[in-house]
Length: 271
Length: 236
Image 1 (tube, rainbow over the protein chains, first blue to last red):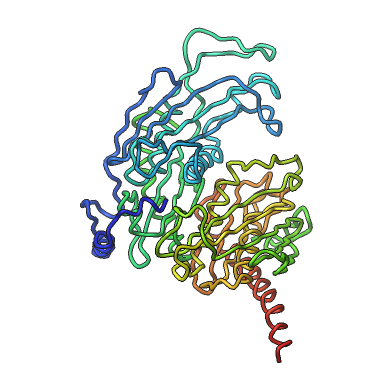
Image 2 (image 1 turned 60 degrees about the horizontal axis):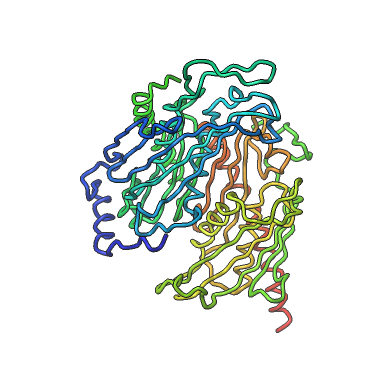
C-alpha cells in the first residue's frame, strides 16, 4: 500500500518524538482507542448488520444466511465465510476490482478469530449432514479509511453476527421446517482484535490512525476472546524482537476487555 | 514439557523433520533453492534486482519485492486447482513481508526483486519451508542481506506443544503458529497464530519455535558455506 505514504517526514518525526514523551498528535494516551461508535441493524435486508466507527475509520459488516452444502471434511457443521472489500470510496488508495492482498489478509484475520474460537456454533446450523446446512456469510465493507481497519472490521463482524436473526426452524427427519418468529445465531464467544504499532525505538501504541500506521513501521494484530485466550496473531509490516512480541501480547490482553465490554453492551451477547 | 510424548511419525515434541537444502538448482534464475522438510518440497527462484514491469509500480527510493507463493495441483491430497486461492494470496503477502525486512532494498531503487515459490509437495509447514528456501535463493542471487531469515512452525497437538508439524498433525492441531526470524538481529519478521492458545502456551510455543529456527539457520548456513567454500577452494 505504498500509495498511502503521503505523510510528510516532518509529521513522521513529530509522531515518533511525541511517542517517546508518552503522547500522541491527537492527544490520546498510548493505549487509548479513538472514540468507538456502533450502529446496529443498519441494513434491514441483511440478517444482521453493524456499522462501527473508530475515530473517522468506518466499517460496515453485513451478515447473510443462506442454505448450502457443508464442506466434505465437516459434513455435520454449517459454513462460515468472511469476505472483505476495501471499497474505492473509502480511500484514494483503494481501487475497484477483486479483493487485493490487503483485503484478503483482512478477511482472513477476522475469519481466523471467529473460526478458531468456534464463535458461531456451526453444529447448530446443520440440517442434513453432508447435504444441507446453513451458510453464514459475513461481508466486511471498509467505508472510510483512517487507519486500523482490522480492529474496526473485527468489531463490526462480531456485532453483526450478534445482531443477526434467522427464521425459527426445526429439523424433522433431515428436513427443514420453518416456524413463526426469529431466533439469534448461536454465538458462543466474543473475539476482538487489538492492533498495536511501534517505531523502531519507542513504545507500543494501540489503534494507530492512518498517519501513525505509516510513520511507525512495525505493526501487529492480536485477537483475544472473552476468556483472555489468544485466538489469532498476525504480524503486519516491520519487525519486532522476541521481548516486544511478549509485551504486545500482554498489552493486547489488557486492552481487549474494553472492546469486549462494548460488544456485550451493544449486542446484549452474554457468553 | 513431557518429553515422553511420541508423535505420529515417531518424533519427539521438539524434533524437526529431516531437512534437505540445495541452492543454485535452476539455470535461468538469478538465484534458486530447493528445500525439503520431511515430505514438504519447495522450489524457489529469484529474479532481480531487475527493471520493473509495469513501470508505475516502481519505487523511487528502493527496490520493491514481489512474491508469488503457489501450490502445484498435485501437491496436495485432493487436486488443487491452479488458480490462486485466498490462502495463497495471503501467504504470498506474509512471505514477502517476512523477506523484505532482510533485503537492502534501498540499494536498488526503481527495480523489482521477484520471488517465485512453487510448492511441489505439501505436507505441513509449506510457508516456513518457502521462507527458508527464499532466503537461500536470495543469497544465491547475490542480493545483499541483513541476515538470513529462518522459519519454522510450532503448534499445539493433542495438548502438547510440538515443533514443525506435518500435515497429519496440522489437520487436528488446536493451534498452529509459524514464525520467521532474523536470528543474529533478534528480529521476528513473520508471526501468525491460527488457533487458540493461552498466554503461557504461547510463550512456551514461541520459545520452542525460536530454538527450532536456530537449527534451521545452522543448516542454511552450512548449505551456503558448502557451495561457496568449494568455489573459493577451486580458485586457490
